[in-house]
Length: 438
Image (cartoon, rainbow, N blue to C red):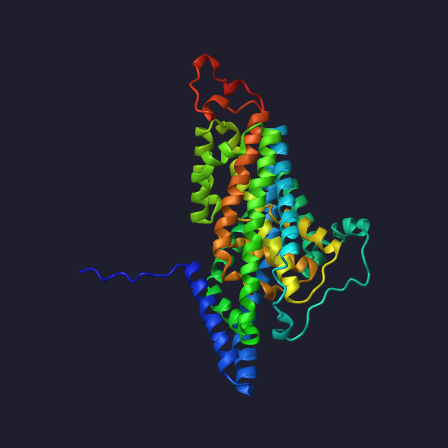
């Protein structure tokens, strides 16, 4: 007789349970446990602090090597697309522009809704975090500051824009040299695999870390923390809707000469699949297949969709933009125009090489925070509620891939309008794809 298998909770469920239990524990401590050495020193600043801060330090440990290896690997793949000429360059340009627009929308929406107001995190941290704006940088200084004088120093200091710049350049050079540098290329790809494995291992303790972070937070602020979290979720969702309803629809209409409503109706099953899996990578096959049924040539989609799953993370960029405003407001930190420009540039470049797996956006969010000096501990506030948002932004990521693919297919004459509109087409009218030179 076979032993009955115990049902195991997935990581997402366990993180959510950590959030709920941490919130309940924090509220109990805040309202029912009187101020004492036990409450303040041993419990809040002792147990809760060690658990939460320890987990955040593990995440910070990942940031520099993960970003370096993943962007080198991602830009190596981009370098391979040169042989595809204008199609590759056009696709990459669309992906980067839509990502920059996405984070700009997110910053705008968050500044209007102000999700972090009312959440005073300065009361639950040992020292108030500030950003030094005493020596304001000019636009030229900021541009030159992206170029590292010493790449090793940039890695040691965690200067994320300089790391991204160096990693992108290194990856493109390795791709260009190809078989001349097989060992170093392999080292970079294997380094990326190692860091992703380490990320998965550390994420296994995320439920405990979230419990400690949330318990400490709510021990200090009580019920005051709920409304800002709901406003944060609302800001992300509104920005995601605007990205699809405005940015994507306008691009599809202007550059692809296609009805956005008709497209989204046909593409809805893929969005549903992406929402349920929260993985752009897992959605690649069904994305290509559905676009093929809609009349978009696999000769284009077989290249653009996998590439998009690697470098086009508009939904993730939106989450990061809103999170920046949310945490800055919660910690009472003022951001300058230069900080906003840095966030747009960092989040856009960080999308290159980001793994198409659930939850990795939170790791790169730590990089975005580091680029403008925000406390990484603020990520703990949103980790527990991130799953629903992760599902929604993955659906947006995959939709963006499909929109760009459709636009490029249209411009290259590889979009079968009759098939898209459900019309019967004679064989003599079919486009001979073998004769098309990309």
